[in-house]
Length: 155
Image (cartoon, rainbow, N blue to C red; front, side, top):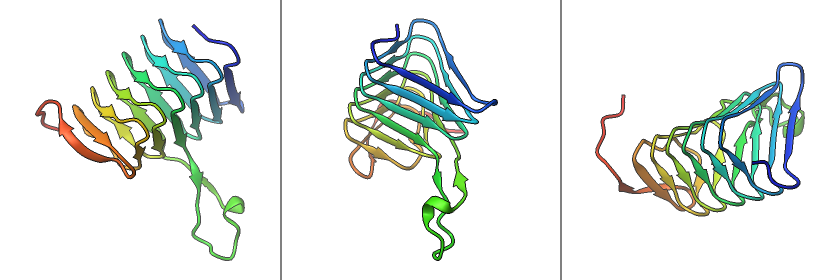
């Protein structure tokens, strides 16, 4: 279900937004990609007022819950040249991946280059700038591990 005032904004000839089965895009959410892709698996709930941006790829697996007001910002600017305003420097993006079964709390911020592991939990308001291993709970700003839900070997 796509609720009221949702914006699906795919700019550029190589852009795509792929939506799986049985998803909810909450009211006033925006999915925006520019010569890139957003892919959402099956049975995903994205709460209202979310802002998901891709400048390379943003991939959300299946059975994922994303709380209201969450931002996923898959891109930014280089800032190597101190004599050039950042806005005029090259755009960079590593992308974002949210694996199956993850739960992202209300108001979380997921930054470029991050993978949220399978069945992990990102607490409300967390700012995630580093990968979250599978079956892990992270909280805070910056996000830090507070619990392991299950011991698994990452490979």
